[in-house]
Length: 75
Image 1: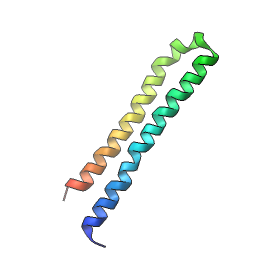
Image 2: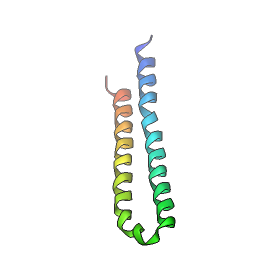
Image 3: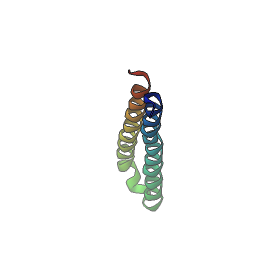
């Protein structure tokens, strides 16, 4: 297999992590909204935790993007 083709395949596989991060953020806020509609009085206490979870998921997505970029541009 051509090494250049292997780089592109590896970068594409690493980029899947960005889509997984988007799915994770959607799941976090979807579940938060579902819980907030069931118990509105407890939603204020959980809002900060939802943002922490979203930040962690986005951080993993950014890390996956970084790995994909490194695979493409590092020799």
